[in-house]
Image (cartoon, rainbow, N blue to C red; front, side, top):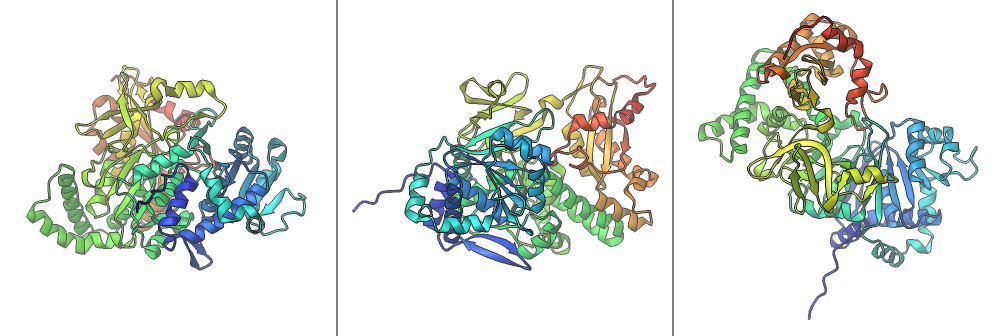
Length: 611
């Protein structure tokens, strides 16, 4: 007797059907409920998705109907996304930190029919711009503390009511659900993700089901997520990185624990004890800086032990990167260092981390080597919103810090004459929503994606990103300086630094704007008897000396034309609210340079130095 193998899934709902069929009783998700956690199997997840999808169909969702999600990371975000897709629609992602007008732009540009909002505060944003979002038929609120229909008729609905209504619909039957999923084509729009807009107007990136299925399929060959892993998901789901993780975990059958509260990351790590966690570099920088600053403040034998252990860990990490095993003597020393230092550091993360995954911005090699030496390797990857986040990633057996690894299986890469990284794969978007000219400028003949990043390939095909094409600095002496690597080195060299902006375009030399990490700097102030006020600390001569020491150490390894000749410590860290950071926490470089133009101009007043 022959058996017929089920066809490979071509959509995200298809991946979920495949997963639920294979492991219906396995843990799929855990999410915080009051003081405890609620667990869902893959079968229970699918049942909830089926019911909510039926409810959305009852509200008019059909093929490629856009439904926006305006919410932070939570189980309900995942549920809403999967239900939108299972109904045949497409998800438009919106950061909950966006202003009312920013929300209105995305909703109107995407022509979203429904908005799923996290709570009353987000509903109020939408009410304030209702005349700007005429396509919105309903707002569905996840957590409502008021009478949602008191002022809006039936415009605002409760998520629970929509799901309960859907459960009674014929569309919620397993037969109709499976028929509908089978009818979702690979090229159907799945997600509209709007770029953060460090410059210019945000663009809606159209990602199809096949884009995401490709990421899920490719991940199976990379050992990033296993069926026996426990994944901690806290990243913003409005960002393409978070969405990619959702798909990867479904494809690999990996359970995810979800809690989007940034304030609870440390406590959750100790409680959840995950084996896999992804984060942006800023998180790893902050953890590293907190550890380093703490032992510096304590001094004495603890600092000596830490410095000794760190040196051993660095030597072992560098040996592994070169394809060598640490020497027998080094291995013996590491056993002692592990017991005295590294095991205590790992316990801060629950003690079971198998691997971290880093993406969305460059990770300092020095910080990556610190974690690797402590027994928690970070696999850095690279991709764009335009390529469904994942296009390159380091492999556990051949990691090289400072690179983003080789391409995913099925991705081709080339370096253009001007150094721009270009690649093509099934993960590349179908275009920018309603922007044919911008699409044509980014999607090149032959299906190549122009990334706007400058990079190079090493001897085994690992990609190293050196900078953004548009962010390269050309000094008045005609020298090109890549600011990002310098900024990363400074942050790694000084634990008190949060953000760095290197400046020098058409200038005689390079300077830097520095912000302090509020938590780490205040810890230093407490240990040294200084005022714990960030603005006061920014002017403190002792703290400036610490930053200056770090910059000098970085300068020692740079060509003279790219060294930092002077710097200013700003009185406050960059924030999204003040406009210095995008919603995905990237520095708006041009905005910062404009805002602090007087400070920057002051560095060059009367300067005669040449480079």
